[in-house]
Length: 81
Image (cartoon, rainbow, N blue to C red):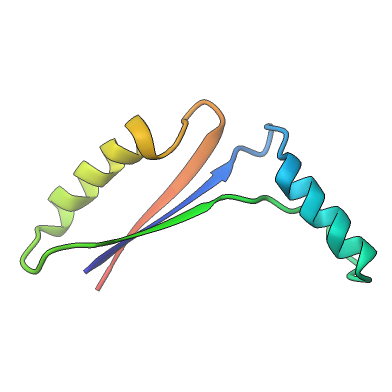
């Protein structure tokens, strides 16, 4: 199993990297880009036999405590086979 975590800035938070990427895309001729948000992607390999729900709870705590900053970031956690 793998845990897949996507961390992105909250919509209300200024995202300078996202603005820079959006500006670069516009300068390269890409049209119709309404917004860009730059975040982090973390993939964690889980040991065979790991309990899915226990892993979800532990990783949810880890995401909230140190993998993301809950004041300015949102995260999505997925456990995949």
